[in-house]
Length: 298
Length: 252
Ligand SMILES: Nc1ncnc2c1ncn2[C@@H]1O[C@H](COP(=O)(O)OP(=O)(O)OP(=O)(O)O)[C@@H](O)[C@H]1O
Ligand SMILES: [Mg+2]
Image 1 (cartoon, rainbow over the protein chains, first blue to last red):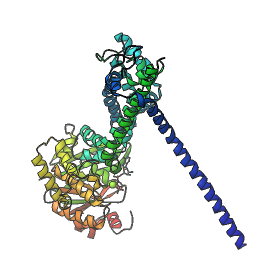
Image 2 (spheres, rainbow over the protein chains, first blue to last red):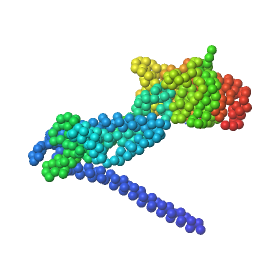
Image 3 (cartoon, rainbow over the protein chains, first blue to last red):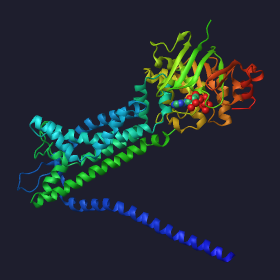
Image 4 (tube, helix red, strand yellow):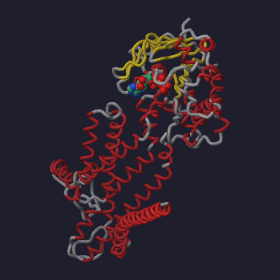
């Protein structure tokens, strides 16, 4: 009887240990497979684009069709311009909405209108980006009768709003109510408490969220196709069509010319590195200002 | 001659639930008054009415009068922001502002009120930290985060922060309930020192503490003020049976 029971205990423990090992193995496998696409994409882009990366690529505009050479300098500058325009629209707008939702939207953001706004932001973030491009096309391009940098920037800016807004709101909510009350109890008006204590207190993580959304839109292609369009020359004004890396890559990739294919790969490499750099920079910002997240909890 | 701060028929509610009923109290200048009573009896709500912080909670409302030097702070033309400048508050949980240095935690009240002169700010920060008995411990690390201090130090930082704007009344809601005996002793010591310049109203669950530090004590029960008198009298010869039962530990 004694013997029997001990057998039972050891056998069931062995079985549990075996299942445990199997499950842990599966989790490690899933985790490894998850980083695999990233590294293979990156490796492939480097391998393909590396050879076409040279000085001319960074400094020259595209050569006329048929001529070998030329670069993507205008597209690089164009992407920077578009992202700057998008940030100018998307960041203040998104942060304002977040401030409304977390600080003012009736009953600490639990009012009915706040609920509608939050739902709309979530809907907007799941709308395909090409639809946003179409909307801006109808709104701006048709009215202005031309493709323009402003239209492209607006499309990207609209795409930024929901992500900026929702991440910022989450972060503002992580600051407990009694911190706000402490500010009010010092005889400060609510808007000063919000701007200089609450917003400033979570500026590290908020910057991170914003940087990630910038990185996200800087690779968008579809919404630019019929808003910013493309431009084979240096940009001449914000009301004119403007080149961008993603659209340039797209145009070159579907062309029949080998040289353009090579340049498309180089452009892809540049774009990936740009996004990488932005993520990396975010990490640095996050780690220096990031104490606030760890300690801001109480 | 009127008291520095007094309440008349003060009632407070959350939505339709009334939690304070017709409270009449007077607080004399440069005294410490303690408020005791079982959990949920409305002590916090009461002192939050005194600096109009109560109304910042959704659906909260208050009626009646609170007179500061004879002026009703609930009058329609009074700005609650100005009142809170005069009546500071220290909370139960230490709550230094995240991502602000020790220096800025103390200076921010003045800074955001428009004081720019570095000399004035430095002088105020030093004076307030000394008053809060924290100066010696932090004078060499004024630039580190306020949240990096220990709980007891954080609470003294919060006291310094409240003192920096020079309030005439300091409300304290169980300021030592989260602290160890040594920090508690420091803060109690501090209060006897502080009452030379400010009037203190303190909520506490610790009756020994109330007996040690306060001049007058009030006993609250179910939203009503049952008894209010000299601390020595209230603890030795309570007039109301309910007070007696509470302080002898027979209920609550
Ligand atoms: N935000 C709120 N919303 C609704 N009711 C509340 C709120 N805060 C407090 N109350 C209610 O008001 C009553 C008084 O609460 P209060 O916090 O003033 O009690 P207290 O005497 O400070 O208790 P404690 O000693 O536990 O801190 C309680 O019955 C409580 O349930
Ligand atoms: Mg309380």
